[in-house]
Length: 221
Ligand SMILES: N[C@@H](CCC(=O)N[C@@H](CS)C(=O)NCC(=O)O)C(=O)O
Image (cartoon, rainbow, N blue to C red; front, side, top):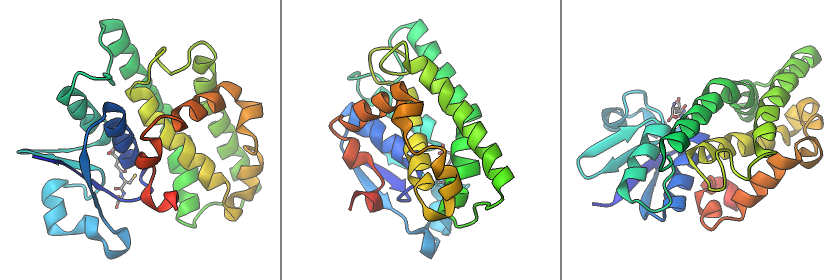
């Protein structure tokens, strides 16, 4: 049976799974839900995902939600280009970085910045913007440090850690380009000058075949 992935366009978590699918070379069907019609809050969708969130994967008799769980599931479908490493050391490091990203980078980049900006509820208080900016800089500096010693977060190959981080980074950067976030955007005008290794890493992932296909559909146009 085909892999069916339920997404909302713009969701960084859905994006990460799509990038994982592309990296693994898997064929999948996208079921795009329209949040303006609350298509992710129907009884039929709650039966798949009790939280009414995306992404959710359907495959044979399996229904899996939580983006990182879906990445682990699809990784098992083919041995090609393992996303979670092949040695104990690689696997441990990949999971360590995934937890770093979800525990320490997601909040400053997505919860405190990208999401409120996209939802039109970002603060215009300069002191609050400054605090958000400092926390985002600290988060990105963590990645910059790692990427100054290896081309991907866990070595020479792309892993689930990279796949989880790039949608957070690019959602954050897209959000900071919005006029309502000008104060914050000014602090991140040139990623390349503040975080050269992070910028090179992002460019390298964006050049991979499948990257564009994995991007949020409404961004591609
Ligand atoms: N921890 C979940 C987070 C899922 C999540 O927050 N999804 C958001 C989009 S990025 C969503 O569905 N929001 C719609 C809603 O909560 O109503 C995962 O990794 O899959």
